[in-house]
Length: 206
Image (cartoon, rainbow, N blue to C red):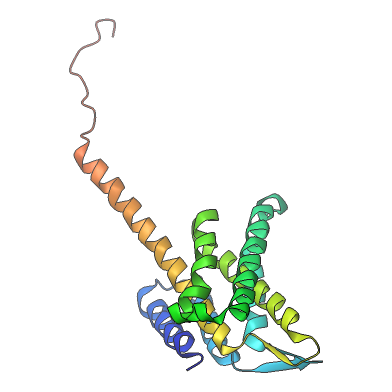
């Protein structure tokens, strides 16, 4: 069923944000974004023979706003990485059309693993998940343009939302696990390395 993972993971994330995050402006904004995506994802706008998901456009604007706070120099590398991820996503989709037998190994696994692995290799931190989503969205646009050839196509279908939801959850989960391991490592080092003792020697020249 298309959209199954997207809606289940979306409501789970909304619940986690609502009940476990501290009451801040960031929590309020995150809740509004998640709810807006759940409502806008199935809505579409049609231009010529292209149908755009309203949620697709909304998420793209939110991602641009999230990374747009950086300077131009700081944006160069994320932009290059997003282009690489878009190219990987585009290549995987074209390969699937040429050889659909690979979907027997798991359609979501085949489509997710290359893009997620590329993001993990090239990026770190929480911004990685945002750049990954931007790259996949650009790749989706390129795929649909290549597939259109005058025929009606849908950009941001529920199948794509499943891919985005799964890839985002995998990326953010790995980021959280990394942060937890680093904190545990710091605590372990602090406990096992005693502080340097202060000598009891008296300075004769005092």
